[in-house]
Image 1 (cartoon, one colour):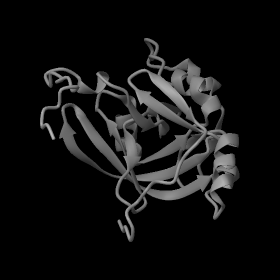
Image 2 (cartoon, rainbow, N blue to C red):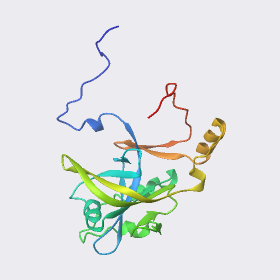
Image 3 (cartoon, one colour):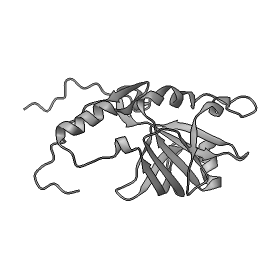
Image 4 (cartoon, rainbow, N blue to C red):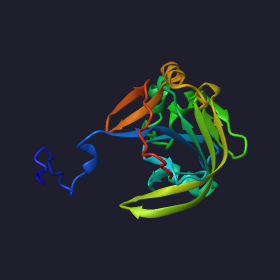
Length: 203
C-alpha cells in the first residue's frame, strides 16, 4: 500500500485552515444579560459539551459583549434553534449601532429562564441554564467560557425515546435538526443511521 497521500492538498497554517473545507457544527444561541439590564443573544458554532458531565462551553473573546456579560453576571443560557429559526439566528449576529444597541434583538421571541437571570430563544428545542465556572486557555485571542448546567429543558417532540429504528427516523423527519457548516452554510438533518461501534465498546 502506498504511503503517498496524493489527493490531499496541504493548507498553509499561517492562514485560517478552517475556511478551506466545510466542517459540521451545532448552532447554538448564547444568551447573556447586558450591563444596562437588557438581554443579548449571540449565535455560536464553536460551542460544545465539556466532557460527559453537565458542563457546557463556547469560545469567546474579551472584545465581544457576550464574554464581558458572562464575566460580570456569572450566568448564561444556551438555546438550540430549530431549522425554521435559522433566519432569526443569523440576524442575531447583526452589528451593533453606534450607541452600542442592537435593535433586531427587540424582535426576538424569548422566554424566561427559571434558575438564572436570563432568557431563551422561544421554541428552541434544547435549552440550558448555565452558571459560569471559569475561562479556559488562550487560543489566540479566544478562550473557552465554561459553565455548569444548572437546569435543562428539551421539547417533548425532540426527547429521545426507546423506539425502533424506523420510528427514530420518522421522528427525525418530522422534527429535523439544524447543523451549521462552517464557514458559510447550514444543513437540515432529517435522516440518521446507527453508528457502528465495535462490539463491547465503552466510553
